[in-house]
Image 1 (cartoon, rainbow, N blue to C red):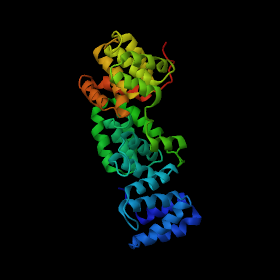
Image 2: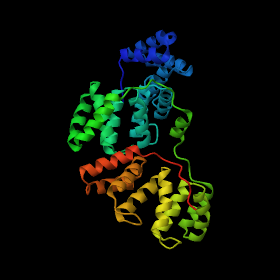
Image 3: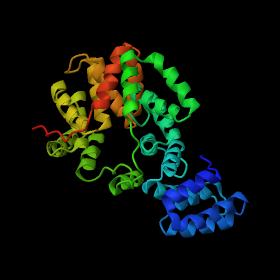
Image 4: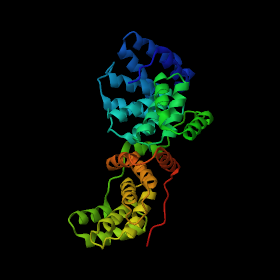
Length: 353
């Protein structure tokens, strides 16, 4: 976890708590420094209840360490999240760490990456380093050596020696053109001011993916009991209305020949519609079709792009598929595939008929 000195704490107090709260916050910092955790926690609780992001972050850290309050990682995550949603870079970094380790929250690579990005865009060098490594490995984000180099370079420029070593180790895996592009991106990068996280984004972070229910669940249940006729009857109208989950299942049935004659063209149509909306399972399946030339030409670059996007969304099969196909590709092919993933944007594609 991140530990902050007195000066850093006061800086956050001034920037986030405001001048009117600075003296009270300073007294809490002094109390913590001398080991009077109960007093510090009491003051920070009062300020946190009034909406101070700095106090909420510090209170969360006290719950994490069990200082002045009973140790409770769930409470720690609650207070740190509130501060992070208000725009505190320190809290955003800490919340990212909690998602990485699964401390007080359910482990999630996507949330780990998302909160690190929030902090990195404000100029937090540790978050920049973490985000750079995530782009190297492709956990929670698409694998992208250019973006990785950019973030590691920015972190190194802020004095992070470990980031400098990681950047220098990454260089030999990149072409001169990729390094030039990464350096251009770093040169043009500008930090963004702290701002509250949009409510919809914050709620998605807490709630996670919506559970499958209603007609789609009924269709899935029919499929698993091998009542393919019922599954098809229920899936098709949903897919035609643009439901990505239904499109994915319908495409998968055509790909496997479950309840319908195997038809790669129909499979590709429905899977692409779902993949274009960001459905990770469909993206992985589409990548596999490109590696097997099933209804589409052999194309390792497109396969890598789809595997990369699916892996970033947490698909474990895609993570393995991406690594497997990369072993058969040249460095230039991987660079082009990563560029394609970097430029990809989800679309609400028209449903098939």
